[in-house]
Amino acid sequence: MQFSGIEPYAAIGVVILLVTLLAGIMLILAHAVGPRRHGPVKDSPYESGVPPIEDARRRFNVRFYMIAVLFLLFDVEVIFLWPWAQVFHAASTNGATIPLEGGGVAGKGFLLLGMGIFFCLLVFGLIYEWKKGALRWE
Image 1 (cartoon, one colour):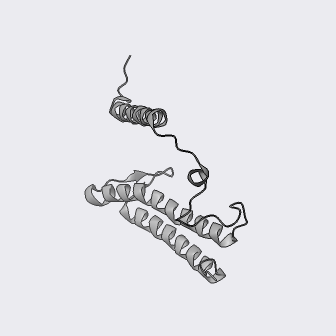
Image 2 (cartoon, rainbow, N blue to C red; image 1 turned 90 degrees about the horizontal axis):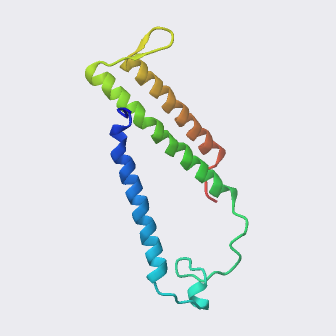
Image 3 (cartoon, rainbow, N blue to C red; image 1 turned 120 degrees about the horizontal axis):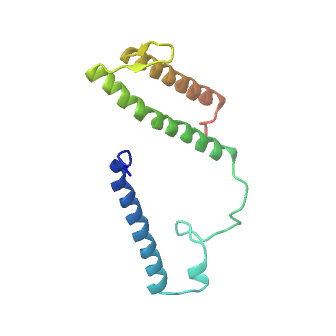
């Protein structure tokens, strides 16, 4: 049986397996060997040295969620940037092209135009959110 397509990833799989195993062993040992000190002060929640004043399950302002969604939006942008940068680098340095379904090929100009449109959409989205007041904290 040939596993020629899996061989390059075998080392990564072994590392992931070893790290998972080592982390599990360390957690089990810490639980088994570690000290067990319980009391009202030890078991109380701790938030930056300030004792809790009210219930933690209160309502949060929607601005917290808006900032989180905007962070995710611009964080996902970076995920799309990395593969594009690698393909654009290959197209720029050695003239590699990408075959398209219509029969043509995409060179570095096409890739640059596509990323320019992507960035324009992100900038317009940021301007829209800014104008709507999602970034204003009052």
